[in-house]
Figure 1 (tube, one colour):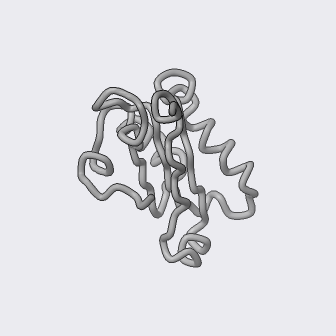
Figure 2 (figure 1 turned 90 degrees about the vertical axis):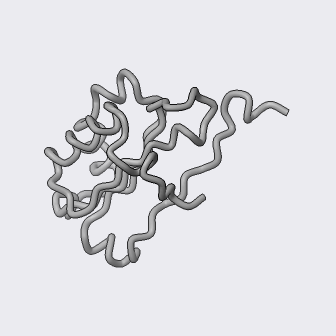
Amino acid sequence: MSEPSSVEQMGPGGPVQQQLRAKLQAAFSPAELRVINESYMHSVPPGSESHFKVVIVSESFAGQNRVARHRAVNKAVAAELASTVHAFSMDALTPEEWQERSGATTPSPECLGGSKGDG
């Protein structure tokens, strides 16, 4: 699935999306930061802020493996992950890796939870 292009999904978003963006910006000073609310892809009420994908590109990831990068990002947004955020995926890359990928991100899987998995 391609990433949403609407202002509703990638724009300033609601308070949880804004908080995630602010914390990640402060912690990593990223060259690229996308905080994408993917809640609309899941069996949740309209306007929910429970499922997020983050694409973060930062020099601070240089020399770190994938696990260390994910731990650092998770630590920066630990309060949200412990409360309102149900699902959280990420691409945490260095600027060189981002350039090698030509800005491509890992596609999000289709939701099979709730009523979508029935049948």
